[in-house]
Length: 291
Image (tube, rainbow, N blue to C red):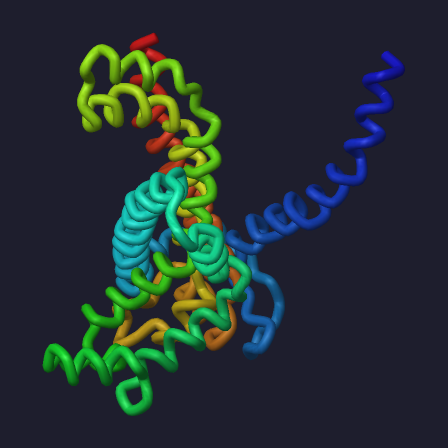
């Protein structure tokens, strides 16, 4: 009993911080979601309107479009980061000249603030001064203008996210690969298994928890991205890169519709939890059923 009390006292500061900065803001946002509130409007009072904010979401074409482009962004970015990160992790498992230097350079994007990443990519993609449009035109005759072409703008937001967060995936999968026992791989090689068979039947099942955790983290980050995309495209051209985080920002700040913005935030949280649950069921449940 004494040890349990000591444990709870040690956890108390963390639980207090979690409650103050995590649970209480969520409860307040949930409360606002059922109110109409524009503190800068003619009526700055909070007016209870039931589920009207959530009813608006069903018919809000901008919100539905933001969901679609955000899901596309998340799928393309996270899937690419997992694949590239795995191959880079396999590369770092081997010895080659300059490995330490390349590993250091590879992890540098992680220490750069998202808003700085967006600024860097904005400079590199600006048609008049950017290095990417210049060489694309000189070498391949391709005219790149993310302010005019919606597809190009979407593509570069994905590439920017891959550049920024692939090192995190690489480090996570590298740690998982380094922790694997050698006996199953040696036995498989003795039995004459090919590399693809070893990957699908030994490596992938053993690192599945690390992949699942990485996908969860990156998917949640991708669904709430704001800083990088705001600096690179501002959500444009049109609404091509107006992801959910940017959509909420534009509803809350320029339009000062706090109640509706709170409702969108609650729905986005719910969608994130549902997607993570579906991934968990799809990746973990078959494995547990097989066991």
